[in-house]
Image (tube, rainbow, N blue to C red):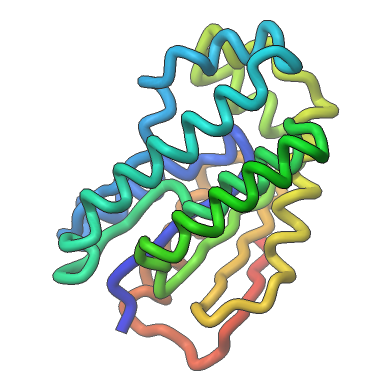
Length: 207
């Protein structure tokens, strides 16, 4: 039985909209990432080298505190989240120096042992040009200058993450466009899988 679902993917891929819609229709609880409340994020986009470690470490602690608060809810009913705790490593690997990453990884490993892990992990992948269109459309000021190269390297991090052997199920969606019809198809496939999960631990769907 699938009770805890985490939806992941690059910046602007559409995680939150899908997670929230599923929550409303299936009657579960929505666990959103609270990144907009982090005052360091706009500073990081302006001076990434200066603020990389503070912003990644603050996200790690914020996500951990949030996850601990939700442990009981996750245990007792359907929860759909628009992020996966392991994403802390994806961004840290991209943004931190090798020395800082080793410090970060050690702390992450300690904290990760104390939180719930999903029954289903969903990855959504979209080309860089389409990610940028989505980012421009949602019009968050501090995101408008994100370079293509940053999104490309994040896509690479997610591609590596998809191939990690996990105990829980993984459903990967590869979108060929960012049209609403594709997102509607993704939504229907994901909803159907949650209600009637396959025995396969990894499924990739191209839309």
